[in-house]
Length: 594
Image 1 (cartoon, rainbow, N blue to C red):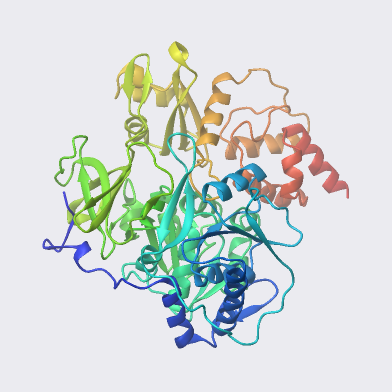
Image 2 (cartoon, one colour; image 1 turned 90 degrees about the vertical axis):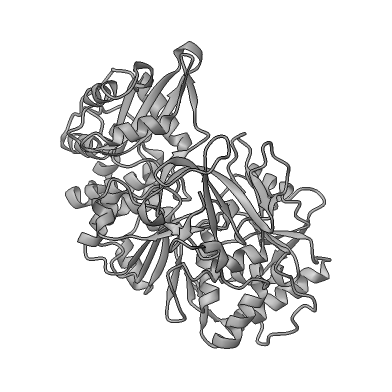
């Protein structure tokens, strides 16, 4: 099935203009808005003219090291204005960039640089050098921002040239290196289906630079002449008063990962009220989250964006309505201008509206491919249109709107039976009081069982959920273990943390019944908080916060409650080192006595 717009034209037939590079895009913005602010960090604000001059100087330095068209340059830099000058300078030198997060383990950083085949690594003094032997290292000191633009490199990149390499998780367990071209990113950044932003807007930069949300914050802002404001990274921001931080920096536009949005709004539904445009994506946004945002007074545009890295950040989108907050799920929306979508069954046949199948996307946003060969390459070409099999299962609603139905490659074997976890998840969310569910296998061989991690009301009991699924599904599909959580664990990049979910399920499956009861007011209050946040019954003094499903987002909420009750401010770093209920209670007592 090819989704049609107005019953006649595919969206693919009317996309934004192509044939331009990111440097062409940026040069156009400099010519229109050169004196306006381009990027602001803690120390300074740079105009587009100043950023242009600085990036030209970076390009000249890289060219002196032999960097040119076809090369790859990695950079490992702290968040700030310099990062954007280096990114642009790499592109102006004709190379593609690989953004390496300094917070990643050294082995991960080294692997990224090696697998991207980076010729040069740009780092700051005195950062460590995670590059492979043979990689040229360019160290940046405290060079002043150039006062004049200098010369732009003679040969700029073209739309077909590679612009960047991103790493995304692979089914084999090894991350895949995705090559995106200039044309891919220009097509995305200038796509008219995205919410409109302009030179009056201030874009909050919170994403990890190694992931594709960074492209929305960077290239959509540069295309519109908007100002990028460098905020604390997402995990740190969530430990603050989010609304106060956004108001202090006068942020008007943000992309907040769905899982983080679900967390924050559950605790403070007014956190994003000062934004004009709030985009979310990367995972499933809950209808309750949308309803709470709207009920809390949010009057801006709320958008649910969908797209794999291989299709350049987002290729389908939906402006959320009040009705979505009352529905069973929030749709991912319609394809962007210039994007074609097809829904196919296992044999490759097109499916009619209403049937669930695998989503295939096509158009100028589809990546060049992977740097390394992979089994069952999901990239194909249909005539002049490049296509990508997403592996995501979707259904077309009335009017061409798409809704997400999980992954197609998640089947597991339980006692010889093929089981699709998404089917069990949909059944669980059909039970009153259950808002979201993830089903994972635990154990191996004949001892393998299914565990369900569910976001559910406190009144929902595991026994009742098992009884409900037993009435709807075959016996081998009924979860043996049910764990209730306040929100599904998320990674630092704001996506569903499948490893954390699996670990949580495994821990619940083997958790000891031994329990030391809380002994004083602080321990009893902590136990109450844990029962509410972790949705466990009767936590004991020796229980571990993270072993029971805690994460940095829940730790932030716990710290807020403790400060309100006891006036004790406990930092996130301290909590990471003292994780049992008894140890946390001791921290609170120390803070109260100080």
